[in-house]
Length: 438
Image 1: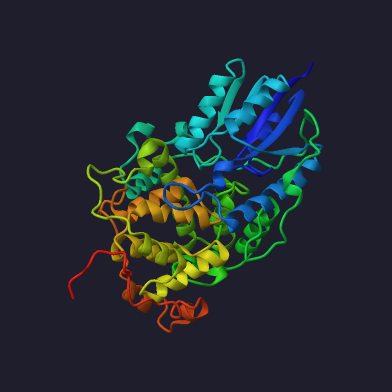
Image 2: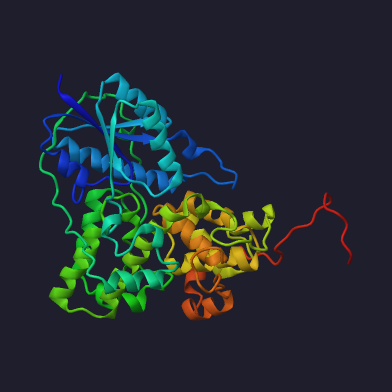
């Protein structure tokens, strides 16, 4: 019997710069391509949100469909299975007598635990992981991971000061080994009709990349990146980076090619600067482990906040006393995407104005954002809440000031009807509440 390898796909749904597929291209055996949809994604968590909302899941399904079509042209089949990964992957390894399991190394502790369970259930299987969701491998960093700098600025300076090598992205694979078996029961066949500004998948990712770097937008990115609206005002790369339909190394190389053709300036550098921020949060997540989700985060004491269900619901639905925040949340709920500045304003409002537990906001963003990334999302929320890697101990984006700076004519507010749902009261008192003094 031929040797068999199972490739557990996660945030790596691409053919270009995929080290695993490049190594397996000439494998003299059979290859099983598997993606697992987990039931827990659609169950409410302790933070009153789910891992996957409608926009996020539809975007994933588009990405899966595009990858399935791409590998089909190479004679392969993507098997999409529903279940707990440690169970369905282990069963498949055993059922088809597969000797090797390969996957992209994940920075999230939950995903790491899943892989460890599979190793325990299948001790006879060789497991190999690849660091291909980052610009650098751990061995390429100019320091040991245990000595990761405490903040981004120190990290960036060390990385930029050392002759740290970012490997060139690998070309797309042109062929793949034969599949282990065909699977006629594929749940991604019923992909919803595309709607919204973003289309999932490796083709859409490359098309957007080509269009962006064919424009002059990279030369003005630093001046426009904080705008609340406008498709070309920011790169939008996070949408496809999150699911791995394009890689950070691809984008970094595209910036360098653009600079050779058009000249480098502060704006083009700032795109690489943002990719380094993403990189820092990835390695920080690895080092932080479960602390990435702890209320007190990286600090010795928890922040002085609480949880009020009415305030949280008002924030989620955009019914706060703040028109700009309402508009931001309306856009998020309608599209699954908001700008980076909008995220900072909404997060700051929840933490500072509404004085709520930051983890509820982080979980809601996890549910709603199509570009959700565990390291960036939870790392940024800790940063705003003052329990993360911010040396200043948290950030407060004063809403009146932000409105004056980024929406002085209230165009964004009107577009997303933020002023229509303004509530004069943060809290509502009804007959069931304790009496209050008048």
